[in-house]
Image (cartoon, rainbow, N blue to C red; front, side, top):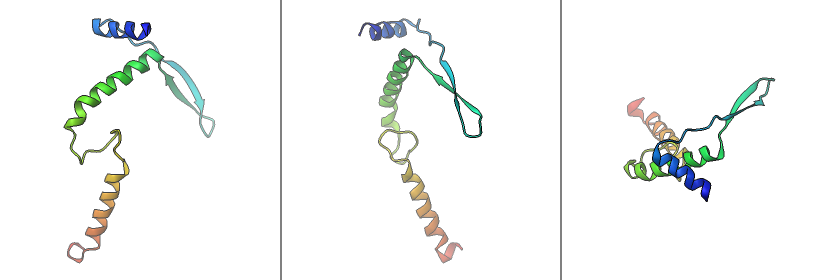
Length: 96
């Protein structure tokens, strides 16, 4: 609890600085390596807190037809609607 309070105090005072990430390389198919950045736990905790705060502020402004990385919104819905609409248009003799 003391660490989270210290983190919150540093953010409020404007003195918090993110730590350097740990860089590791993981193998890919074909023998190449992919860089992977691993943030510290404090940085990850702060990122999640800011994301929750911004989500609470902006979620109410999104339209029901807005998609893309929104919690609880299925990403396949807009694609299935687009496929359905394209199918209906293409199968209509007036638009062929």
